[in-house]
Length: 338
Image (cartoon, rainbow, N blue to C red; front, side):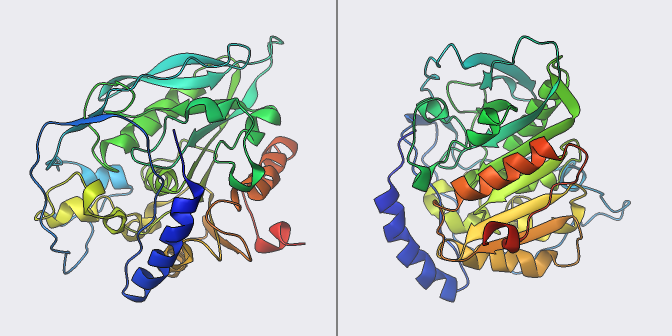
């Protein structure tokens, strides 16, 4: 995946302006080749009101239950036909996870041949579509923009980089923060069954669009020991029209993709992180909405941006996960700024 730091530094300026208007537009660029089966565009109307499940049935207990009975109606059907790069065979293999969309490929790090079990991290990179990191997973990267989160592997964790429906020549179409939630839950269930993985210590993390997606997963399941979300937005609507997949005339399409409306469903320790010079408006909006949920921690790191916040914070979290196996996932700004 090709990422341009300069492009997104320019976007930071745009983000600051749009935040004043109540919207945030942030994400990473993707170099994937894509094909569209439809050129129809959704309307630009924003919903007037957001609610949870409108039925008279029992209140849902997670986002998947809130989505039950609702089928997304895609305005465009997009597939990325670029296959995964061959990984460094000393570090990674390619595996496949069975999801509702079909068999989805992923990079998975090779475990030591010692018969022990290890904690594991599923990491979802940013961009459009999220996931599918490529050679950054095993090649040296600039620590000021380390989107690989490889420190978890380097600290002894099993590392998985999943690809999702409609990406990397996988079956299905990109649904834009909808069915991809099921794909990540399937990846978590897959890892929990591996003989080298401690099933009670599988973590999920992501950055930018990947951060938004993992936040939706945290609202949908409690199978993960902890969830780490860097730089998410409160509502993917703010990524812009070109990245929306659903028909915007259907208000519930947007509601069921926006993490800000479902934060009370989170039952897993979840840390949301952003630099104060990055996409900070979205973190503040999420913090205000999620302040009543003790499972949520929000950390605004002073003097850091959307990218350089990744390496130092991931290093701290990796150390805590490995050295404190029985502790819940937590993070405070005091642990980052010393």
